[in-house]
Image (tube, rainbow, N blue to C red; front, side, top):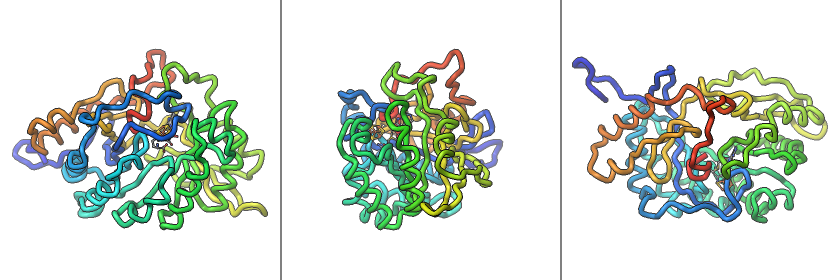
Amino acid sequence: WRMTVGVRVPLRLADAHGRVATDLRVSLTDRCNLRCTYCMPADGLQWFPTDEVLTDAEVLRVLAIAVGQLGVTRIRFTGGEPLLRRSLEDIVAGAARLRTRSGGTPELSLTTNGIGLDKRVTALVAAGLNRVNVSLDSLDRDRYAALARRDRLDAVLAGLAAAEAAGLLPVKVNAVIMRGHNEADVVPLAQFCLERRYQLRYIEQMPLGPQHQWDRSQMVTQAEILALLGERFDLAPAAEPRGSAPAELWRVAPDDRQPGGLLGVIPTVTGPFCAACDRTRITADGQIRTCLFSRTETDLRTPLRHGASDLELAELWAGAQGLKAPAHGIGEPGFVQPTRTMSAIGG
Ligand code: SAM
Ligand code: SF4
């Protein structure tokens, strides 16, 4: 809360473009056990020094401020690979004890490559996890291994099956389509997900991977993905309004080989959803980022470690969010890729 002309007004993560962030992406590590070509260089990256990564207690304090003081209602744990954080279950349990301003529990979700999820999903659900997104770019073992630079398809499929069995429904699947690599997976991934009632989202490749690798002319667009799907399925735009959800949804008519359902495309580049964005982010090393593509960030870790009060930290965050840019600007002449890559931001 803050006092304005003698009245207590709730703090919130509002910006100058009419948006209010209620969805927090919190990165728990910059490390990963895969090396997806669109995300990381083959040799990995220079990881953050351990003492710069927020501790469990610090993460939970940040979450408490976000939920209790700033009106966040949804928290997504990401990374790097969040399952590499051994204390993930404890962090989820701590987050599940928080209460939103309306007295509810924040919705807790996880974005993961799925490796090792089979062994931990029961404990994660017991801790309070509500939803999971598993990244899966190919169902072909060789193509998966080429894209992720690790031969781990079986582990990912085991993780997905375990998430379904544990009741994290609907299971969501994210797939990045890369030209010359996995266009052949567009239809099989859809078939696989429709059959199992998983919600599949294709993601346009964003300029957040190894520097200078992204080339707009090489990116597989939403239009191309829909054209590939249209060769096999009977598709129609879904009636649901898009709202702040980034995916554009398409309804697949049932046929003799699949039961029908919804497929989504996240057209970050060709159909940005910036005007409806309700996100804020905190990196594993405690920096506030208001957008994936921010070129500036606000250091929360230093004041957090030097005695700032919850209110001071909340005001710092609200101030940073107030400066959120209206749009990511990909495609504008002055666009410059952020220095951090996706795994160091938290996708
Ligand atoms: N390691 C976890 C995973 O892969 O799901 C969580 C972090 S990862 C950075 C989050 C999501 O970002 C994944 O679905 C991944 O495919 C996506 N991603 C990474 N780099 C991307 C890029 N350059 N363009 C589009 N999506 C990307
Ligand atoms: Fe790791 Fe996820 Fe990046 Fe792949 S996309 S390298 S799994 S952080």
